[in-house]
Length: 240
Image (cartoon, rainbow, N blue to C red; front, side, top):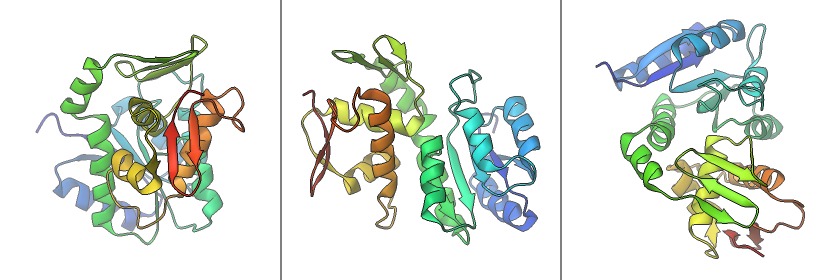
C-alpha cells in the first residue's frame, strides 16, 4: 500500500536489524535499514521516515549524537521532530535519562521482545501521524496562560512570544496537563495517556519529561508556576 508508514532501523548488528525488519514488515510497515550513523543521517533526509529505531552504540556517529543533531534548535528540516525509539544493550539508567533529555521518545533495552517493540512503534505512530489525531489537533484552539502559549494546530509552544524547542512527547505531556487544569494525574495515568502502553512499572520517563518541560517553560524550574508536583500522587498543571 502506498501510504504505509516508513520506519528507519539503525543498528550495526545485522541479526538485530533482520529481526526488527521482519516483525515490522509483517505489520505492513515500509522499513529502511542503516548500519552506521553517517548512513542514518543521509537516509533521514532522503526518505523522511515517520519513525526511527536507533541504537546508541554505532560505528562513527553514535545514537546520542544523531538525536542531539536532530533536536538541535538550529535544525529546521521536516525530520527534526521524528519520533525516536532508542535501542541499546547498555542497561545503565543514566543512558536512558540522557536519551530522554536529548529528545528520545522511548527506550528499549536489548535483549527485547520484538512484539513489544512493534507495540511501542504503533503507540508512537498513533499519537503523531494518524489522520484522527491530526484532525483533532487542527480543530483545537491555542491554550494561553499569561506568557505561555500552547498551539496544538502547529504543535508549537511559545514563551514570551518565542517558540521553544520541544519534542513530541514533551508537547503531548504539556498539552494534556494544560487541557485539564488543576486535575492531578499519577505517573501511571500519564504513561497510559501519553505513551499508550504499560511501561512495566518504570515511570522514570515521566519524571524526566516533567523535568525537561519545567526547564523550558518555567522562569524558575525550582519554583514552577505551571507544572506542579503533588507529593505522593503525581503532577498537575495550574497557574500560580
